[in-house]
Length: 168
Image (tube, rainbow, N blue to C red; front, side):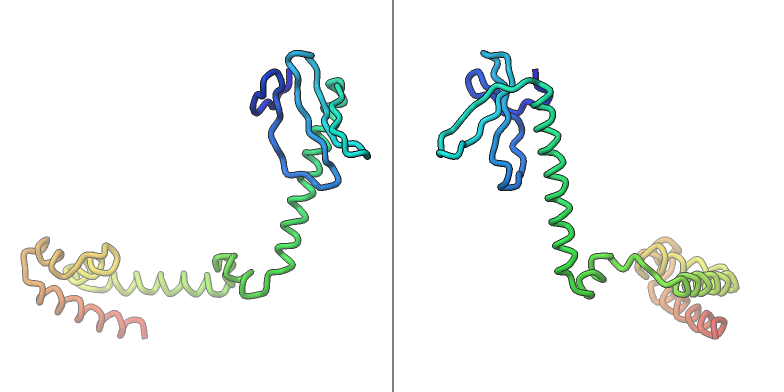
């Protein structure tokens, strides 16, 4: 019994229809009635011929189809890559490739920023973190801290000035 049955047609089970090269115009199937594998193709005179084949020959044709499909897919991927221009390649990479210097620079700036935030008074530090890192609004922070949104805005503005001076 074939391993990769797909659908039945009376007594014949056809296998998954795969994309094949035009050089391979045959179809593999299994006949329950005859209890055998069948290869169907069109001969040189245009007649459709169905021949019973043994399991080892079926496996050979099946593996050939799989190998052929792999080559077709590889060819398509190669052909697609050739047609890509530099901008398309850059866009597809999702800007994942970063320059090592950029990564190090970003890390250093991040560390300096956190050092500067640690230097702020406790209230300003808490409010800056809530506003910039927890994405809360002035109103939401004001409710948490039991004060006015204007007080929060003033506190954050003062903290920003202090951070700028520290980071110069």
